[in-house]
Structures are given as structure tokens and as C-alpha cells.
Amino acid sequence: MYNIKEITKDLFWVGANDRRISLFESAYPVPCGVSYNSYLLTDDKTVLLDTVDKSVNHQFFENIEYALDGRGLDYLVINHMEPDHCAEIASLVKKYPQMKIVCNAKSQSMVNQFFNFNFPENQWQIVKEGDTLETGNYTLSFYMAPMVHWPEVMVTYDSVDKILFSADAFGAFGAIDGNIFADEVDFDHRYMDEARRYYTNIVGKYGPQVQMLLKKASNLDIQMICPLHGYVWRKDLNVFIDKYQKWSAYEPEEKSVLVAYSSVYGNTQNAAEILAGKLAKLGVKNIRMFDVSTVHPSYVVSEVFRYSHIVFASTTYNMDIFVSMEILLNDLCAHNIQNRKVAIIENGSWAPSCGNLITEKVSKWKNTEIIGNRILVKSSLKRNQEEELENLAKEIVSTM
Ligand code: FEO
Image (tube, rainbow, N blue to C red):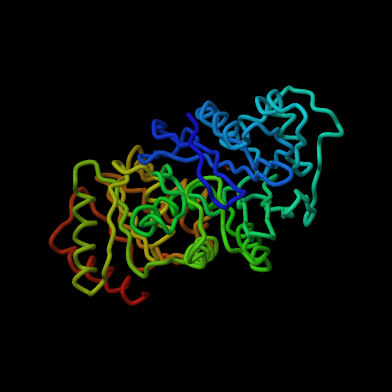
């Protein structure tokens, strides 16, 4: 049975939700599921914008068939060739062999990499920056957005209804729960954290490229954003665009302290907790603490993008950084995190070494300063170290 959603009189969401998926991209937990958005424009010509993941193909084809209402499909626009959006291209070609594929040259090569069908030369419409497609009452223009999040990504702009089909940009984890528009749900409380976790983990590495896209988009009159995951935006677009400005510039949203610790027997945790308590006493609000061994790194990465000051407290393990902390730090390095103030607590019973190793990693972050004197816990914190913690807390506060 079909499940389509009307966006405008001529535009329909024909995507689908997956609430059974445990790990998106085999990497990220999605406890609230994920939506794969595909849009169908039913003008004089019919145009499908992107397909979906193969896990939801049945729903997708029922939706298209219903929304087409007996008509054929004239065009498929490919904005992004990652398989969570392109998986159904081959099946679509089989079902609608007369359609044209509108994409850029990079996407065309990727279609040939991912699939094995032969598609007639004259049914490819290869587009470049600013090219347009007339569909009758609407004109679609195409703008390249390389590395947001793959090199072939482009976005599509409908200049009549002023809609930006933004590919992965402005997406969020979380299935679409009945409503389709972000203003119909409590986005700030229910979805903003998941939008941040989606952005930081999926696209976070490519801040400068996202900034370029935002610059291009600022020249367009955009009244609606249709991303490939999550809700459609038609009100207060600036709220979300401002978030993207901050995230892509690696600018913290919260002037406060995130304490990430890994602790085998609780002694490193104890030092982290005492420091956090001292920070609170000095007036720091909204302190966040994570045991990085029990929280998936994608959540911590997302919050590190949010916070201005980060404390890493780790035990030494096999002469190295404790495993879960090392995974987090590597993840942060891979995501190009920068522009932060960092303090370090290390623990080691006979040869503490993780402090230097953490310093080495953090030193590679741009515009990042390691502040205060590193605290060394030898097995457990001693009473006479209270002053050291006090001083570190004061040093952190003095840089806020
Ligand atoms: Fe949702 Fe880069 O794919």
C-alpha cells in the first residue's frame, strides 16, 4: 500500500522509513530509524529526484506508481550516488526504460561503477554548474556541491516554488513520523541533536566544502529545503542554516566543558567527576560527561562539535591510550575537529604514557590549545592533588 506525502500541489515525497536498521552505513546507531527521501515532481514532465536504499525498495516503487497515477517517468535526477540514495537506479531503468537520467559526469561514471546495465547514450542528460531542466511549469537548476558528502554531489533548485533539493546537506537521523515538515514536529527537542550527530559524523570532515555550498545557496531565494534524510524545512530556515554555518566553521555552540573519560576501575572517572564538580562550583553550566566506553563515539563526536572546552581523561592501557578513548580521538581527528580548548588527565599505575599520546593527537587540531597543567593520576587520586584539580578548573574557566 502506498505511503506518499504531499509537499506542494505538484511535489510528493515518495521515500520510505527504516526503523529496523541498527547501524546506518554499518557504523552509526540510529535508535529512531532513518528516512530515505525521494521526491517526485509531477509537472508536464515527471521528474524523480534520487531513489532510496534497497532495504525500502518495495515501499518506494508502490509510492512512485501511485504518485504517477498511470503516467510514465520522464526524468531521474541524481543528486548523490551513495547507495542509500541510488540503490534503485537499475530497477528504475528496468521499469521505466524510456526515462532520461539527469546527472553530472562524475555521477555518470559512478552509475557505471555501481551498476551493470546499458543505458542508451541519448538518454543521459549530463549537466554542469547552473544548467537547467525545463519540465513545463517548473525550471530545475543544478549546482555542484563536491564533498558534501561525496565528490559527485550536486543540489537541485526549483526556481518557481523556490525549493532546494539539498542532497545529504540539512539531513538528519530519525525516521519521519507521520508529519513531513520540520515545523510540524518539536524539531529542536526531538531532532536537532540527531541532525547534529548526522552532520558531524557524516559530513563533518568537509566543513570548507559545506561553507562553499552555503555561499552558493545564499545567492538563491530558498523557501523550502528538501534533504535526502529527515524532515522538509519550509519555516525558520535560518535556524537550521545558522547551525550549518556554525558546524561547518567548527564554531562551538556551547561555551562550556565536555568531559570525556575512559576508566577501567573508576579512578580516572573519579578524577574526571571531581574536576567537573569544581567547574560547576566555579559557575560553569551545562557540563556534559561521557564514559566513552559505554557511549557510541558518534554521540560524543557530535557533542564535541557543540562544546568549546573538552577534557580528555584516560587511563594508560598496553602503553597506549585506552582503547575506547583512542577510537574517539581518532574519530575526532578524522572529522577535522578544530578550534577547541583541551585539558588532559592521564592515569597509569607504572608507566603512564597516554597523556603524551593524547597531546600528540590533539596538537594536530587546527586552532586548538591545550590548557592548564596535565593531571597525572598514579593509580588513584591523592588528597594532595586537590589543588592541582582546582588549578586546572580555574585555568579552564579563565579561558571561557
Ligand atoms: Fe545519505 Fe551520503 O548519503
